[in-house]
Length: 249
Image (cartoon, rainbow, N blue to C red):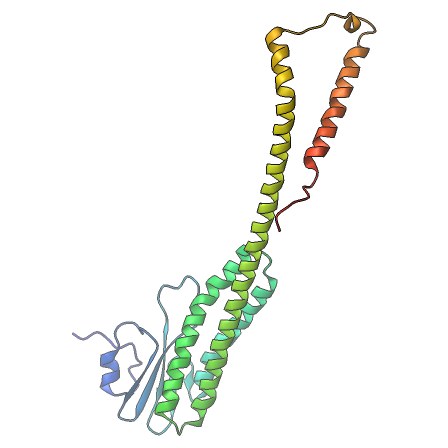
């Protein structure tokens, strides 16, 4: 038993159209037979859509258009293209509100399938225009499809440039932070190299001068040493946190 056609059963289209279509719409394309024209298009795709939802537009030899999704007349194709335009306007607003790499990536993820679908859609309508040169409605529909394709390309490029710029800013900030950390580590190594020999010698030979000062006026000597140590720590901290003069551009 033959599988049911995905075209509406009430459509009196040439049998070759039904024979060439499987259970899914497949790629966007045109079909011509006996003066009949069938456009196989896709609904605006989402970022997570694995399968494309097909939409079929049938033009009879007398110029009458029919669509299962939007009714009859050339206005059906206009409504279909209008969905693409509305979706791109929403993505444009999302792109304008994007401030981080994550935001720009979300815009690109949704624009990529729309961009591909819009390009193939324009090719289909251009071919249909060549097949039916006497149909004036196809001219405006073809031009509208081109505008949609161009808009999707511009939005995609703008979002990609925003993503690249955001990543460049982050990379530059990370490079500056790494440079500051390397300079601070170098300064610490210099300080350690300066005091390491003294600390080693006093540790090995047990240098501990007994001058009696530590036993007088307690706890003033301890507090003085603690204060001097804290002041020295603050000075060293200020030196280490000082911005290096030779940061990378």
